[in-house]
Length: 126
Ligand code: HEC
Image 1 (tube, helix red, strand yellow):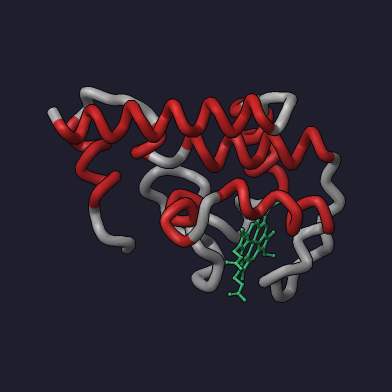
Image 2: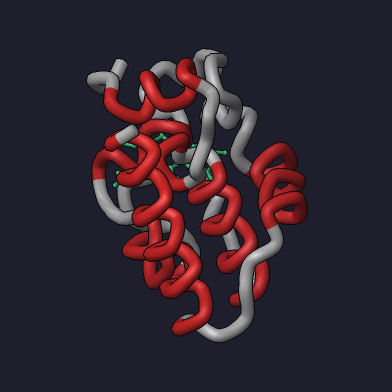
């Protein structure tokens, strides 16, 4: 039960952030963009391996920092932390959509009765 309570309070925090930022991101557009621009190197699913072993799977990013903190770097063109990579020029809406997609990958960000999802939420990073 306490797990469910944590998941719900985190998801409410997520909603509040989106409202504060103005326009909400569109998860499916963000996923499309990630498939098109990022999936050649990064794992973008829930269990796949990154094609480029150096590129962190997107599902682990939320454990490293609040994914909203990526917004300024994404807006500048993702020059931060990227090697061998074309400079991306993303519109502010595209950045919002990608970040919404990254939020959606966070199993702790969604209330769930799915025990497996909750176990992943508290599991160590692989
Ligand atoms: C050509 C391969 C490639 C593509 C395409 C690519 N990345 Fe990366 N990305 C990498 C690699 C490699 C790293 C790890 C860089 C390092 O550790 O120096 C990385 C790291 C990152 C990080 C972590 C940066 C950090 O400082 O922790 C984020 C966030 C990220 N990428 C987002 C994206 C997004 C969003 C896209 C699509 C718009 C994308 N990447 C497309 C190769 C790529």
